[in-house]
Length: 276
Image (cartoon, rainbow, N blue to C red; front, side, top):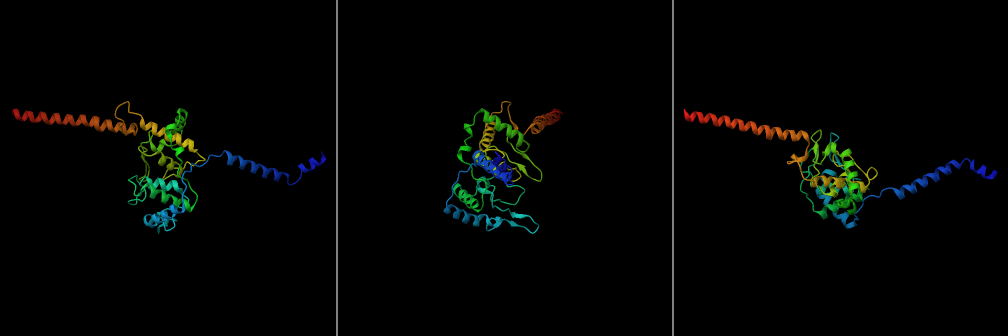
């Protein structure tokens, strides 16, 4: 008993307990932490083909080695792409935002310049430079399998974190300095997911530590469900909110009545002239 008490009071006992606690915590984290939604596996040929495409179409802005090119005033022609991951490339190139047609506060969505295979190769090259968010696996994009509880959770997260910019139905909205939150209508589940994990433009990043891949799928399911709902009250006006609805009423409703009154007045004046 005395020997056991002496060992407990050894100067290194506290350090040993601390190390064992850290090891146990690390083991639990590796077992219970959400796994990244990685889907793509690239070959050396994919990486090489992607580098060739990059040198031709992207290096003039992003640099020969994707390190970015700075301007004299401290800005940049194109930011560094090291560490942005395959998901960022797939989103920006797959939605046509890159390459940009001209410099602007925000890259607009347009028809893609690269086909699906070329986009995959570009993603492979950028992913080979440094670890970053991967293109999501198909299991996290199948939003049609989400149940009612998942829809509820997805709606709660969207209304709390996204409606300030994207509107309650994902119709988009204006932001300061010429920027805007784009509409989510017609955007694929994959690109919505990639936007959440990469944070394009001014959008915040929702990595897997903040919101799990399953929860991201719930958010996508909610967005798609809202967009599928009909406008039971008639013309939806783009779902942009009560202010825009009021503008429609004034411009089309009141404006139409004023125009009709002017037409009646002008028609009546012409009738009187003919009788004289």
